[in-house]
Image (cartoon, rainbow over all chains, first blue to last red; front, side):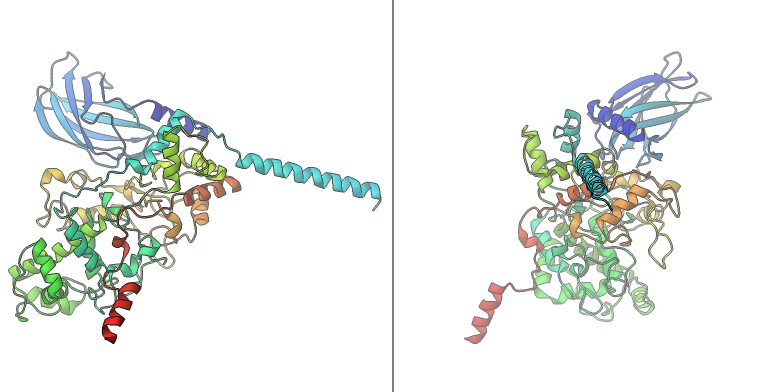
Length: 129
Length: 440
């Protein structure tokens, strides 16, 4: 059964390219978070950057968020190969996220933990590479 | 036994043999057609996707031809060792795809790690099994002074360059004029920050600016060695020619046998090898714990969890004062991952020419490719840390097919064959000319 799932994941992962941008509400609904990859398409074994945009639930830009990044492959039980970091506040609620890298084909998740305006929440983006 | 029963037995045996043959046949059977998704996966492994040149911003001479030739001279020169008998090529033997065929390296003393190939290593952001260096040049520094390997000192290397007219000319044309090293009080014959107490004491007694000048020479030699290693890249194998044929929609080609194709299908599917052995060099150049037991009489190697700390603290890393890169060009070290997930994780080796590089794993723990496949099939619990792999449940025949496929990854090196030759050894033709001259 595991092999069937793996095969399906493999086929799915190469027949669909990872989303280079996406937007969604955080788990508790405190923030609306969007990312856009500077690398298009996103390829494995290639370090690249994302731009993260953060708004509150009322779509007001958040200028001073603290963002931590984690991620990995749930199927393989391992994390990202790098420790990506927010390296620059770009203003207007946008933040530069550098050091993104994926080292395997397959299903990945990237979780952004956000702290701003006295609230803490997190959002998880799925990616198929 | 009656004739009747004898015939019954013969009939039963015949049926059993026929069914066995049919079963074996089904084990080797593989759909001759690849899906478009599978072909896309195969293309990612094709050598045509390997960039022509590996970049290294921390070494401005990384792709300089003269530096590569100087590096080749140094690579094969046995004077760069404590007993004048060990060169880089002692362990990185060209005919063995720049490995040594031993479980663990044999330099000045018995080593603890298996000698990895250096072919294609210029494409890797990390060097050594634990990735404790972040460039080829910073890697090259370590064995030269390691008491188990060349076991010499940077001061000795500087004197060799200073005193050898040919080397001095090459060095000064690539870097800068050498300081005057003839004053043996300022520049003793042997000195360096090594384990040998006498040599390290002598080093400490030297003036700071003299130590700095000698270290700069040492670094420059390593950058030339790295430029040489940038020339060592793999060329196309039968596998690559097969993928090329598929790209040209020639699916009926006979470049790979049926069994090799079945092995390839297992490689990208059921056996999951492609998870880590991906890209045109069949490695993601990252670190994974795959439950390899420690070498006999040795504690388990902690691997990357220690290696990453070493590279972050290495004065010769991309961010250090000897690097030619600016901070923004050091992404790999700026965003290096740390933590317990890296306990006993070791670097994924390339699989190109894997048939030439036995024994396998970081301390040569597994003798043959059969042993390697059995290990991944069983996926034993890790002695330390967490084994990322899970049992594969491969059949006897599937294991054979995988190994047959791995053999299809053999191929020559790219570029001029001169890069595989020892410049200090005369060829037969040169020997004959030399004999003729001496006879005259």
